[in-house]
Image (cartoon, rainbow, N blue to C red; front, side, top):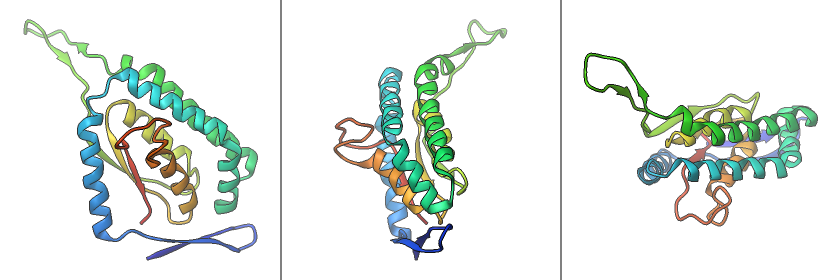
Length: 191
């Protein structure tokens, strides 16, 4: 199945994208699970550094991403810039606070010691709407990645350019979270 991105302001076709086959989707899920097996063991400070790097990338490219949102879904550029700034902010927030949020919590019981422990749960599927094509992704990804999870994303079919822009920030082999890593921690996809 192909997806065509159409500018709602003038109804012009921006670009046509080829969707993934079921086999490709299955392969991405397996690849993401394999990445999670190592990602879940990364230290909080490394996860935080990567999230801060992502916040910097978002800030540096906010105008470009805002224009893309305007073209694909009609969001005014100023609102798109604000959306990207909010995405950067959520990355910074979880970079600063996730370790504290995920600390074991002692619980008073009759046992000698009881506590709640927060552990990564694995690969999380996220299905996103079109109206906040960056924010909806980052409000999910920042806490999920900070907690040691990975994500597979199904974005809305009318914003494939936004989905691919986000994907490129995570899966570019030379710039995965701005570092040189063999394997990236998440995959995005179009359906």
